[in-house]
Image 1 (cartoon, rainbow, N blue to C red):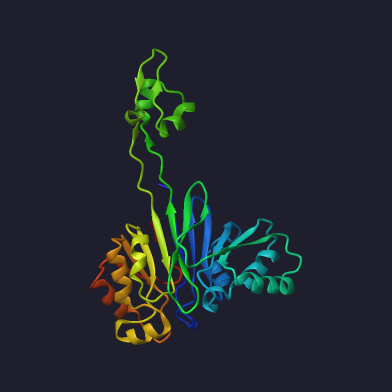
Image 2: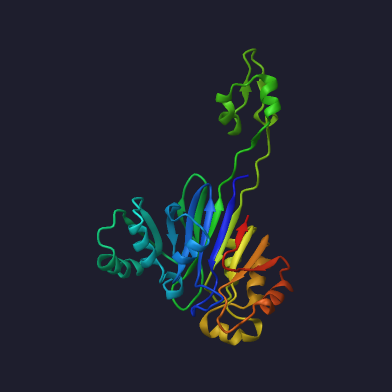
Length: 304
């Protein structure tokens, strides 16, 4: 099965610490890499994770708080120094474009690649990217500024070919794709062999949801139903719920409630406040509601 991986580059919140970097992740599927958020220091985390810069073609910015986008201009500048020529596509609130263009004009003159901006509406649940392998859909969140999450959903996969049956009927290799797509095989003698007899069921398509930053918002559950893995912010522990409400963030138990209601496969907690030296309390709080919960950590990889 083709690997579907998420690399955690940063899972801290607004104030960088020696324990956590600001938010950033790489989602990888079929040799394509998609960046989600780009906080300060992201390019250093890419180096530490030994991730190939050149394969990042698309960057999705959840909202315009510095811990989610301050790393962009530095990374783009480094791309230029490394001789990048492929376009870089950035999906973000429309307010980012004039800010970034000003920085590009001043700091990144002479880039040999295009920075293509794609404005998104964070209030809409809408497909903003699609290729032959997956779609990326916005998830409207509720924060102090316009904010959305992103749902990466693999497209339905083709069934597996039964090699023994192909050999038994002497079917040419040129017909394999047709059979995978459900077209029956007709032998030279006129016998029709159903495609279902020549294949085994396809692997389940996988999905990953990134939800940061947001206050507790049960309305997103319908958009997340059945998702394999959810990354949900839990900036605060349960005892700091009033602080979470004030700053439009979520607690550990609230993140777990979202995962439980959505019938997700796994929950990853992240976006930890700098006020905590240990996130184990938050993990324990979440696991009381949703047992299959893990803590994000820099350098870790999630395999779907």
